[in-house]
Length: 192
View 1 (cartoon, rainbow, N blue to C red):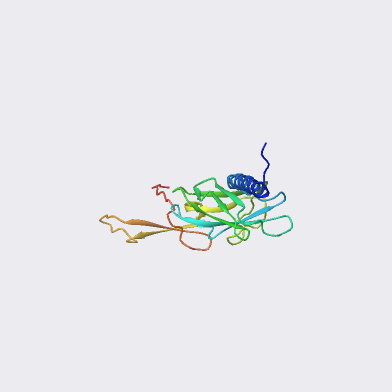
View 2: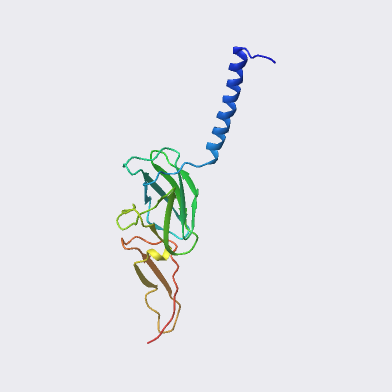
């Protein structure tokens, strides 16, 4: 039977420690870090009205129950019910994770949610471009869903008695009077 010297024992310990450290490090890389129980997520958007082919930056602010930002690297998953999020998963830096919403070419009211561990999103764009209350999804208006007013004009404004052709032009605006880009407009001819 062979006895180990102190150097052999130390060497064996270091090899065993290195193997255990490698296994722990590898397992940590495979399991994403999520927010602790009691955390909240608040969403905000760079803009809350998007053209049908447009996009908006979405920021999730994740806060622990004590009111402090979650640990850097906490994974947040974003979901939109119309369009897509890219990236779908993002990690926090100073409590904030960022993704971009891309419209799908269709008009509609988009609800965006975010999740991390047991925490789920919140927010509505009732005021400005940020969410105001945890628990509800962030809402973005896409294309025609943002329309508040449609005005029509004819060019030329009159048709001569001998007949002719005119062009009807529709201008679509949101509640602020800003043009809504890419809103589909359907024209119909009717009589009374």
